[in-house]
Length: 401
Image (cartoon, rainbow, N blue to C red; front, side, top):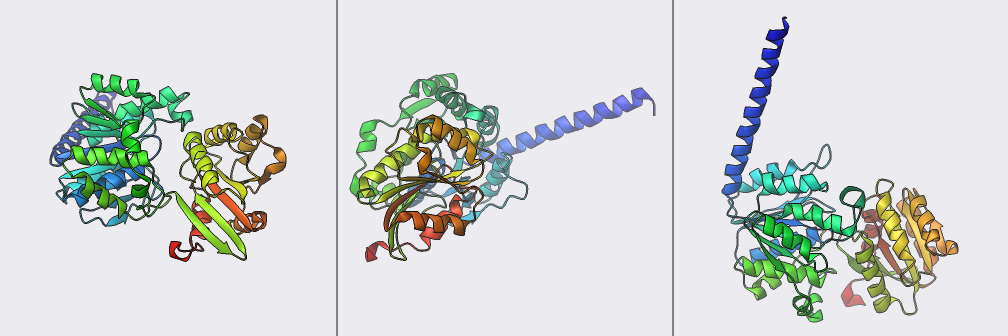
């Protein structure tokens, strides 16, 4: 075949691909336009929780809502509130957002609430501008996590998250320290910024929080309530829907276990995998349950998340000292090296890298010495979920306490 003919064929194929891509983009834009309100939830911590809270609040207010979460257990929720797990043959890919929106559009919802699944800054912007095209954006917070992708600093994380700011829409955030970054992104995309003040957070009473069936954060509830009110749902109705939510997989839970004459308070905080959130959980749990109990940190490391282990190790030495620090998972050496360097007592470290769930739980029971507070942290995947399930299956019901 002559070169000019070959070039003509290649050029023809390229033109065909471009036209096909353009047609697909137009079809998707038309499909998205059939959904009146699109809510796109992004942030470092609490994305899944806030997505579920918003959807539950809107549903309780009579709105026809579909939702998609991408947290510990990715799922789609239909207008009746039924959750259907998402099975991925070849791992997560942001193209999944387009397929999910197509599936949701068939159910004719008034509102869809989508959790952002992109990490790379350019993909966060692409996901918003080309896929979800939201008119209500949400950024829960901007904290130092995934610094290998969005870093190196906290401000860089905020800039990456700002890529999901809607165009000519409304952006809601509970972040207060890095608000100027989101003010700039809203100005650039001609959107209105709605911040959640400390007063709005403190207005959520402890009595209200006690109605939740799992450990939720006031910031998440205040943020979700403000969005529900913005979309026309009465605050009390929205709150009622939120408090009736079942816990998501990986949600923080405080479990009381009476097992072989050992009384253990086990806190599933694995999903809060940035040091700021984890430190707050650790200190709060010590304040509530630490007196008279041996205090144990259970750190679940992942070899593919070395930055997370490093950050956690650098901060752990500043928290109230644990009596024992048990390491599980993979890549534990990163945590050990940095923890010792930053003042953690090496005598308190116990490494169970690669250990089976039974080995880890038996070690926890041995170390508990009668009464213990055990806080799981750092990563839910790679073993954390299995350990949490072990204790959840043996937890004492609240009415039996």
